[in-house]
Length: 67
Image (tube, rainbow, N blue to C red; front, side):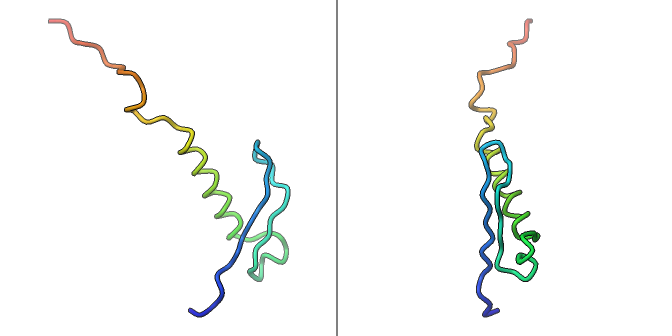
């Protein structure tokens, strides 16, 4: 467990097109590995959660029941 941590990275445009990626692992030398893919999924989910609104941020959507 004394191995140096990996450093996956990628560069993309705002619309999600990947321009470049790399990782320090053995598979990363081919510019493709699961570490970069995991990083991309993490960024994608983080952006999606950041842009979503919660229920408490929306106006009340229920109606008052009539007797």
